[in-house]
Length: 305
Length: 305
Image (cartoon, rainbow over all chains, first blue to last red; front, top):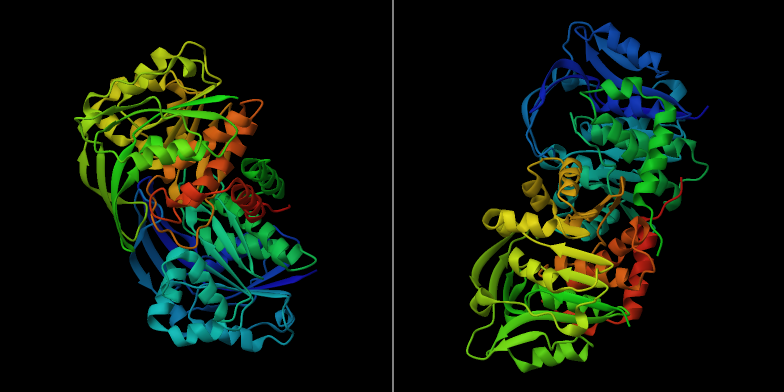
């Protein structure tokens, strides 16, 4: 079976929206990415760190999805990374109310021997030096390295970020971040600039407005899957990246055509994610539902000339 | 030849963007709609009014495109409708700096005998009573009546607006206006509410983020055509409506399938519109360019599962 190596946070989130408050729940980029990839025909492992306060039921949950959690280090005297955020009516904006790095502050990732030759590597949003450290432990060139990041690292660790960006195949980034990273106002020009930084492909996520793919001198644009009621957008971007990576892990070739399909998979996975609080919908999702929604999405977006 | 009846402003616009100022140029919803429909195999007429200050070269321009301008009333002692607006870096927002109704204040539209049986009727953004007056002069049920409107009429003439909305086949409206009209936050729920008001179909325009189509218990979503550099978004919505109407005028049937294609045509026409100031690109556009871009757009949005 193919292998997908994921590095990313496994965390506690506390989410406030106009529809209610979540309390302290399972969160983290690594969690969302792995829950998404677990629906594909690939063996996923999460490299991460949690504190002694991290509830075993959450580890059991991830394990029950077939995810290899052995590379999640447990620092029993430490506390798990905690993020509290608040959404307003415009889902595209959120306020961070609290970020407690805790055990993440000293995180030194260790890639298990078995995953040093993973076909797909997903570097979830984390300090660029942590992402680089994972790449440095890889022994066999992966078929595809996918990187997610955020504006925080552009503000605080730009040179380290540029270094890791230069080493990946696909950069997944949102529209505002693409503009910030490239210092360009148009997403087209932004993508051109980013491609010069090293990645072969750039995926620009636009939340409820869909996603764009650039690379190989080609272009693809997709709307989002329309969700009747968004309950909680937390993890949607990570779930998108996970669905995207999951489809690539099943694809014979990795090229512009399969990346386009991967965007459809990512889009559909993200649409499930936002329909319930936190990881709720990702926990109970069935493969049939994914395939069904992919068909619906195709119908929603296809026309003849 | 099929006939398309358009009612809408023929006006002077003055546009400021971060890229420059236009001076006083040809504008108006009727102008943009007709310039777009003129590229299709249909005879278009504009019902409108201008003042004695309206330059003949603009009337000649419209006529040179095969548009019947005889129903544009010229009030020699009056002044042409004038709008001045300013765009910021976010193209989706604009400030109106000046609106001078002038001859539009007393506009009483007269539909020429020859167009009372038009197959396609496009009611451009105007006072709902003017739109209603046009419908009241129609003698043969058109194949399709398309209505565009704006928030100003929701604020100031809601009951008249609801009356005319109840009589049309397709309402074309932007996302913010859809929310205001329906008093709903989600575009899905908004569209459901608006369909209850009478139209068979609702098209929600989202500017650079594309468009959505609702009706017949079906759904379609499309991204926008990506434009490398937006120079001036004025008239994009009207040009979209014109391209949409133009395609329907050429379609054997008017149903959900042909409306989907009409959205692609509208999207492509609007993308040309924003590439130059005012009506510039619409004036020199060739049918081959439209067909070429439609093919490109299809390529940009097609993927396989």
